[in-house]
Structures are given as structure tokens and as C-alpha cells.
Amino acid sequence: MSKIVFFCIPAHGHTNPTLGVVRELVHRGHQVSYYSYNVMREKIEAAGANFISCDDYDMEQKLTPKDAARIGKDLAFSTKILVDTTLALDDKVCKDMEEMKPDCIVADSMAVWGKSVAMKLGIPFVSSTTTFAFNRHSAKIMKQSIGELINMIFSMPKINKDIKRLQKKGYPVKSVLDIIQNDDETHTVVYTSPEFQPCSETFSDKYSFVGPSIRPATSEIEKTKEKLIYVSMGTVNNDMLPLYKQFIEAFSKLNYQVIMSVGNQVAIEEFGEIPENISVYESVDQIAVLEKADVFFSHCGMNSVNESLYFGVPLIMLPQTAEQSGVAERVFQLGAGIKLKEVNVNAIADSVNTVLNDENYRKNAQVIADGFKRCPGAKGAADKILSVCVNPVENFAHSD
Image 1 (cartoon, rainbow, N blue to C red):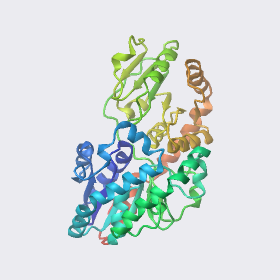
Image 2 (tube, rainbow, N blue to C red):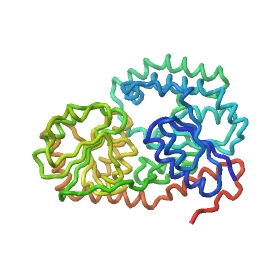
Image 3 (cartoon, one colour):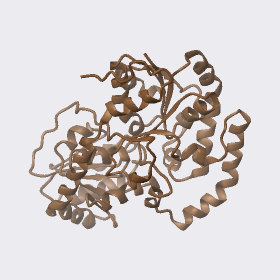
Image 4 (tube, rainbow, N blue to C red):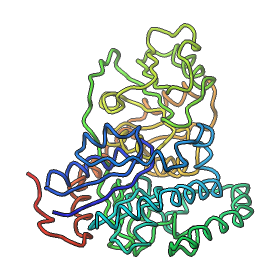
């Protein structure tokens, strides 16, 4: 039996892909401890892991929705949050690791405190990457504006000051790149396929592209019309009442079934009278909807895009951050969706008709889906993690 410790940030899109891997490891008889946040406790414990709460130590839980949206756009702010969290957890986690003596640490690529502790204590480490893996080749897909580059240059003194805080606590970190970048020497599990990952051939053999981890649907969605349109702007930056109203106006004129998931930052009562063909919810079982959807209007979070393409559903894309723009660009390159360049009622309606009337979008999405389904999935991720463990006893006893 190996002892494996997971670290993750309090985000569904980063946690969900790991849950199938946790279940697989536990099923094989390994002990899994999972450092996360109380909002994720139920689903992590349901996967079979020993849940350990970070809420009392962490800075990230104190963020407002506006702060959370800022993380994807402001490198200095993001670095400060990550360093603050790492140092707040330092004493507890280092003490726990010395007592547990884990055979491996698996940390989300954004949960840098996991990677930092592994570096500090010399524990074998695997990066869990729920976005694309980035190196100098694949990073070209992330098109930064001149303004973003200028902001990054001016933010470097603040970033370097935070890096020195880590160095003083014994972390072998030379620059912010040691925290945030993928490198060829780090064992890495990436939850997408080699075909969808940009420039996958440029990454070392330490990378395992295992495909998305798709949970089963937990409810049943009734399809009431020939075509079903799904709209969701994700779980973080979704305070978008004017946009949602534009969707409703556009779709009221179309003979399609529409399901909108709008989050909890807007009150559904504010929408007024909703047309009969449109259903608006705070949240839905996204997998159940995508199993029957024909088009997905999405912010292009990696998890949502993976789920959409897994079911061969083409996308109409409204990215909000640089990361989401990179995902949208890849979908566009592979012909599985279009970017909404203008946001108005006519553009929304026209984009739906464009995708529905051109079968190539559905065919290209299905090609990506086929690639996903060829990947080894949770079993492949478990194999990768166990191959890195200090104590690889019976590591490859596959479940049936």
C-alpha cells in the first residue's frame, strides 16, 4: 500500500477531474489523504479519501467573487495569494508530512503549496494539470495584449518580493516560474488528450495525457424540442445579468429548447417573464444536459470544454480570462466551435444558426471526443502517480 497526498484549490473545475483518480487509487488498496476546503468535503470523502480541511489556514477562502475573477488576470495578485496560502499552511503541512511520510504528493498546478512542500521536504511529486500544459511552444496559444504584458513587467518587483518570502522559509524557489510553469523534469498528469493539447509532442515523457475525467450524470434531462441549447458562464465569474437577458431575448425568437445555468450571483426573479422554451436555473447537472445538447454557449473553462467535447457538442465561446481564451483558441483551431465576437441579440442568434446549420462543427467535436475516449483516463493517471511513489508495492494491480 502506498500513501498518497493530494492538494487542490477550492474550485470544482480543478477538483472534479481528480475524483475518479482518487476512487481508482482507493479501489486498488492505497491510502489517499486530500487537503482541500470544506466546500469540497462531501465529494472528496465520497471518492474515498481522508479529507483534511485547509479553511482555517488559507487566504483564498476570504476572496470576494471579484477577487476570484482577478486571479486569472493579475499575476502579482495571484502570486501574493499563492505565497500567502503556502506560508499560512507551512507549519501544519510540513508537520503532517513528516508524520505521514507519504510516498507521493499530487498537487493541482495552482495549489503551489503542495508543490512547494514536496520541493522543501524532498517528497516525490506529481503535478495535476486540469488546464492545458504550457511550455514555450504551447504558450503561443495564450495571446496576451500589450497592456497585459506591460502590467506583468510592472508587477515583477511585487512578485519577486513574495518569492523572497518563500525563500526565507526554506523553499527552493528561484522565480515565479518555479511555481507556475510546467517543466520537462516534473511528473505531470494532464486531463486532456494528446490531440487536444497544443504541441503535445514537445513535452517530455514525464507527461501523461490521460484524457478528461467525466463523472456519470446524476439526473435525467428531458429534451422537449429537436435542438437543445445550453448556456453556462461557469461557477466563478458569472455575475452577468445583462448578458443573460440578451440570451433570453435572442432565444425567445427561436424554436429551440434552451437551458441556462446562471449561478448564485444573480437572482432569477430579475429576469422577469421567461419564454416557455427557456428554462433558467441557478445550477444544473451539466453532464446530464450535455448528453443531450446540440450547442453549448460557454465561458471556456477547461473542465466545461472537456465535458462538452467528450459528448461531441460544439461550442460558441465567450472567454473571460487569458486561460479561457487559450482554450477557446484551441477549440477554434480544431473547428469544433466559434468565438462570439460581438455580444448582442442578433449575434447570439446568428451564431447558434451558424453552428447548427454546418455539420462540420459537430463532426470535428466528435473527432476530439473519439480522442478523449482512447485515453487511459483515471486508471492511467493512477498508474502514473504510483510509478512515482517511493514504495511502489503492487502499484499496478489494475482494477477490473
